[in-house]
Image (cartoon, rainbow, N blue to C red):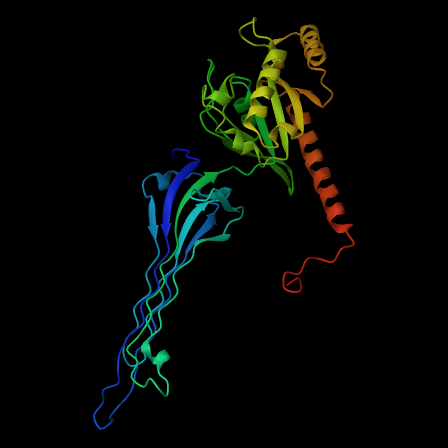
Length: 358
């Protein structure tokens, strides 16, 4: 199935049913009075998370989604039926934006999670509500209100703990294939991933994390070169970024340090807090160099970058260094979880109560 991570749709909630103007007509009961019933409420539109979906491709073919209208009121004080609400299934990780107001309406982050995106119209009142001692035969009723209509941008942002960042052919797909059961396309010629891939790295009973591989970013991506920066958003929810660098490029004129600085500049142009995200340096394709040559290139790279963070060297072909990297990632993520739980449990403030705060 084709991977699509953006789609524009229009949602229309159901209109409320109109109230009824009617009078009781029965034999032997003169002046029966008003008996017009209310209309039914219009149906709402909800988006629902479905972990079985991983693309928004279906929304490229169906753009308009309508909930059911409320039924009109009827005589004999019969109320109209409420319109059926519409539940639209979307992949987990979908962010919803109102295109008319540029408002971020919310995100679907769990299977079964629901988000109301369009509220149905209210029902109209029948003439039974307008009778009084001075108006015994009311001939007025109210119409139902229209349901909300919205133009929505759906953005699928993959949910992963660790994201892979690097130039094309830096070895991202090979690494994710070595660490997990993901099987992205890998070729023995210059080739770049065309869409994000997710892999689950299992480290033992109850210990695992999710890693994401996105298409490579090239110079000028902020201006639309290559695939642009459209896939960098998939790293916005990751807790840690692995910056992969090809330490043995096929073209010997390529400077790995210049590539790192180039990619960092593109990420900064992208904006947001991605440039400030914690980042580890991973030197790939170690198997292509002798140990002495590798150490020389490594020291030269770290010196030119003035790199102070963690550094790992791996070979996805032989598996060298991959297990050590996976163990370090798992340990880091577990330590981060422990710190967050400690911070959340150490507060002396009472939990916020939205009812008491009114």
